Image 1 (cartoon, rainbow, N blue to C red):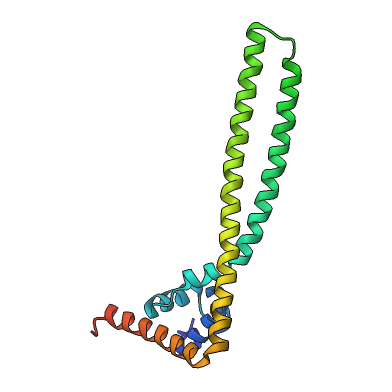
Image 2 (image 1 turned 120 degrees about the vertical axis):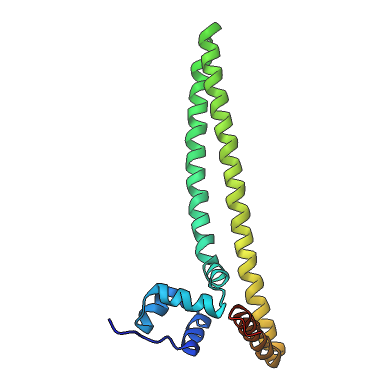
Length: 170
């Protein structure tokens, strides 16, 4: 297979356009690992970029998870109601057995509520990140386009300095 040379400028442009490493590799005719290695050498933070670009997808998945937890919680509550109905009028060891089942179901509901809260917090945080990021970009571009250009230039300089430090040039 012939060796292909990755053009750094093209690579950076594709990253800034929001392309994933796989999409970049497909467009440039190289492997994903070659793209990732070059990005690492250039000190381009794809992890943060991918996380921010994927925030809306993560929020959507969080909603699906919340719906699933709601279904599980409803099933547990139905089972708990059935246990309580069956336990009416029982005494002794039989009643203790039903009480143990009830306690296990209540504990599971508590775990489900904890998961629900975790999902909710991630969902809200994801939405806030998306809104904040868009507001910041829109505001800076609108109020001071020259500041936006300076910001992008400085980000590139930081990446270049880090790259030079890693290569022992500084």
